[in-house]
Picture 1 (cartoon, helix red, strand yellow):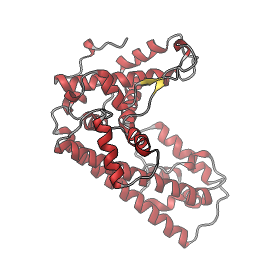
Picture 2 (cartoon, rainbow, N blue to C red):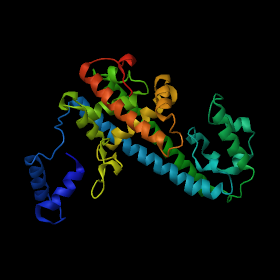
Picture 3 (cartoon, rainbow, N blue to C red):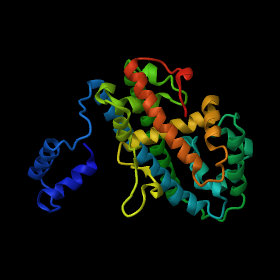
Amino acid sequence: MSGNAVVHNRQLLDNRWDKHDRKDAANIADLISTGKCLFYDYPTQSIHDLRKLMSLRRRYRKLEAGLQTRIRNNLLSLFFSGAGPSVCFVPAGLSEHHQNLLFARVIASMPFEEFYRCFFKPRRKKQREFLEEIWNDAHQTIGRPVDESVQFMAEQSVSQLEQFRTEIAHLDRQILTIASSLPEYQYVISIPGFGPFITAKIIAAINDPGRFSNEAQLIKLAGFDLCASRSGQPSGKAVPKISKKGNTELRFALYQATMVATTKKPLFISCMNKKIQGREQEKGIKKIVRTKLATKFLVIAWTLMKEHQYFNAERLMLT
């Protein structure tokens, strides 16, 4: 059942917001007895393990993001100040062997080619331009001098960051192993724009496709259902918006898949262009169209899981 319903129904029991174990049990019993639960869900052991691993991955990603923020605010902003906006980002290739590259004086003392080889193999033009900007800024910075304590802090921070990234990579392998063993995996990943991780997340959220009797229930699960305030005004003037009351992680994964499909897959690029034709100046039109397409992707994934079929572009209706 929805967490939102649990919170609000608790106050309706006795018009009080207090919370304890007996009241929680009464709250759940009241919701079930009145039918205020969305869908019955009793996952298999594989789905249960998949959800647990994804929950752990989310926690690691939050820790990784927090550590990146501390590196940016406590190291880069103090010892690389006065530089351009490029130094606001911790380079993705940073490792514990290059923690001194957080400091401008070290970067400025190196030839650019040597600095470039510390991070990436020479393959992408944008990567080179990004590092060129950092290298040029290192010659102009007015950051504070670096002492031994700062060197130690940088070493520890980068070492922790590398550890988190290693753990996340290990989790990704475990998630892929479990997800790929499920029979539905091969059907869902055949959808253009769907990678291994997004496929695993969608399978974990849907679980048994037979527990949904129609598309509307599935769309509610993700929070893509439309809601509007029509009180005191004609229905035609009410502007509907997605409710965002469902599974946030599922909704985010579907939108990411849509971003990939509408930028790299010709079928969906042409669909995107057709949808926004004549509406290019409309505010937020690309986001609106991608949200609608994400909803379509969810229904397609559910259908393929239910019918045990691969994605077939000829059967796709994008109207």
